[in-house]
Image (cartoon, rainbow, N blue to C red; front, side):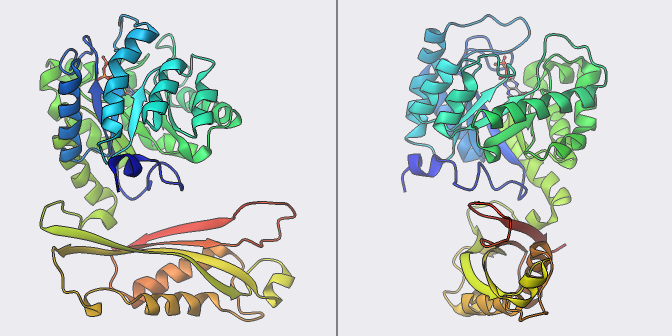
Length: 408
Ligand code: HH2
């Protein structure tokens, strides 16, 4: 598979959210960014830095051609394109991770998406009226970040929540797929030091927005203010904020110091998301997952009396986390899970006759997950139950529920 193919967004959404915290590596192709300005302006240096970040564990690379620091110099469309396009083109054909473009200009976003980026990261609160249609047409992802003219709030968290909720609704109405939206409360944008600290302290409150959360505290001046240190000495301060963000439920962090923050995030994830605990990266270990899609079974499940009496089809997807193995485990069925047994276990739960079924597919999915965890030596399991003939009185493509269970 080429890097380009692997870099595309998966059909189910941007990332497998909830499994762990993802790392967005910052690549500023600018002369004036506050912490790395001028370092990667030359395309060769930008490519080398992107490769290094991917080797260090970045899950995507955010390419920006205009600094957004307070008082930044605005760049024209042509200049911004000249900075980011050669880099995006080269990275898209080579890197095995998606690329985002950090821009507030719809023209730059359109060209970057055409060149191989798959996400737009707009820190300007969608100030360009063409941005939403550009993202929608491309089927791309969109980071919506909170930003406003002044650091004045009635209630900081309520105001940011309302802003992000309204923006997400507007973006969805404009045709951007709901599962391609990421929300960011905008650490360092129109906020005082106290505001920024409060955003991190209360990050968990933004989870009620029901979308993946991104936070970008890396090397920012709030850290400089607290520790009295310049940008190149803010790695520990960044680490502290990143760890607290993970504890608050961040799904992704935008960072410059990828190697260090990958370690911070893995450690914090081990505490916060126990199912990732056994994931220790290293050349001599492999992490195995078995995925089964669309297992068709029939049963009498549903809240309506007729559903309790008549069988209808259900489709079940399962992801079985087998945990970590040393490289080169025995090539034997004993060293893994027998798929036939998995199908049998799932079928036992789903195949219920008249009067025996569950009311809710949520409960059905939970029962399948519990049985799989009981029957097999798993680190975790994801179960999705689709009910394509649910009596909803209208046309729909699919209806499903998903449950995730981990051991520990
Ligand atoms: N911060 C910066 C730029 N883009 N995007 C999101 N979604 N969230 C952020 O917090 C964020 C962002 C500013 O950081 P940096 O790119 O390092 O600096 P500069 O704007 O000076 O290039």
